[in-house]
Image (cartoon, rainbow, N blue to C red; front, side, top):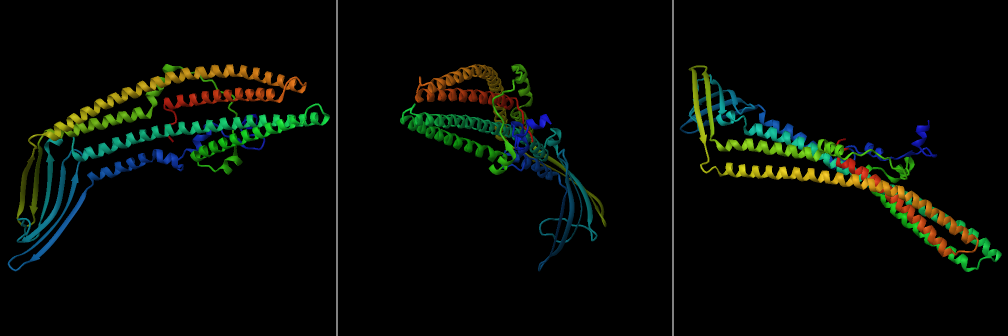
Length: 444
């Protein structure tokens, strides 16, 4: 029961904590889907690419009756490409009379045929266009998944920043309202003193002016709070009415101190960061391109053989060879250099990212330590500012101070408390930035 009360206020509302953001980051959220949607497209493209290995059924028929020649041709076949590059064909055809586009002729009952086409150097190098198409799509899909994780990591970090900005203005609004309440309460005291003749009439005017000034401060902070709320709500896809009915915001005046070990953070980041993993798959794609480009170094040599069985005339065979090679080989040489430069660029990109990661974590760990020290000092400063404010109010009631001095003390105390809020927010944001750097929250 006690635990439940911690998460609900007196009106039964839940306290919206930073951990609650995750439940709203689903594929139904447009900000989330646009961050991760490309991975679903690329995953579907893998299936599309596998179509290069589909079995093809082909059929053709033509019949002619020209003044000096007649002919009829019918052909149906199945073509099946395989992963190693060979293509198999089985079929039936019948050709009678004079053919217009070929010199095929069969018996009256037609012939069955079966054949194979072998790309010699593709077979020797374990690579061909179809295999490259599928493997390339698979690598792209995996890289896209890590790219999506990186987008999600950055999106979550951005949303948590807007969340803590909202908490800041919520707390600041409480401070400004408290400052206004003090002025209104003092106004009642001044009214009594003016009525008894202890204070001059001008004291009421000064008090009313102070109230108006503080009302304006409240309105300005309300505007900032409302703007921060709208920005935050758009990311979690909730309306203001729904949020206000369901949730209340927590205080930010406590920061959970987590043990931070720089070396452990760096190891975790190098292991988890999705952008580093995406670069690994980018390298795999370049390695695949290099393997595929190797084929350009050799002739495009295809050997094919077909066997036929004519229902009337018996067995027959056909063998053949196709040979093409670019003499200058500029495509191969140019692509080879292009891939090598790409690998060099990628290696430096990886080194740069790792260096930035280590530098960022080092700075964040140091900044968190400073933020915690500022919070500790800020608590002392608040106690001092509050005592000075109370003392000035007592002096004012005794007639040994004026409203200007009281106002200055109260404004100074508020500024000290506001500064402390900034220290708290800064500490929270640094902790979230550390989580972002080590690659947390990179998947749905």
